[in-house]
Amino acid sequence: MIYGLVMAAGASRRFGEIKQLAKIDGVPMALRSYNILNRVLRKGKTFLVLGANFESFGVEFEAVNIIYNRDWSLGLGSSIARAVTEIKNEKDCSGILITLVDQVRLTEHDYRKLIALFFGTKIVASDYGYKKGPPVIFGESYFEELSQLKGDSGASELLKNNEYGIVSCEISNASFDIDTKDDLKLFLSQNQP
Image: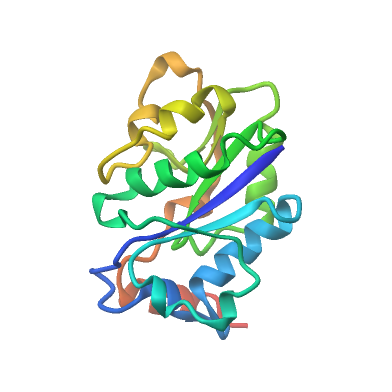
């Protein structure tokens, strides 16, 4: 069974305020991203990984499975390691899907496309055309490596290792993320009903 991690622990310095709580269609970005993945995975298997500004996530997040990384300032690798350590020993966990909270163009269809390629493979990564990155699914043989990650590069070093037999999945929506308020304005302007 695949478990999901929505990485949302960073301080979002370039955004200028708590990016994860910025509203999209009236819903905080973090809750929106969590809900999209949660609708695809089996109930209770999606987790929102928080760190910076943890105390600001209020009642809207009461029904969300949260993993808190107190060492979030050590980088994305630290947050992935913390979350994987918490869920890697679940008996039914055969894969962990890692996605970023600010990849706001991702859809349920994108996640299903990625998951469809996972079975029988070790790593399935989104292919942006120029590199591989999240969302990505790691099979259980990589859980130990993931639980040892450090620094701010996340799991990118694993994705650069040609010996790992990574399966590529073309997901054009994965190449866009929100770093600044201008990015958010662009996304909102392109997604008006």
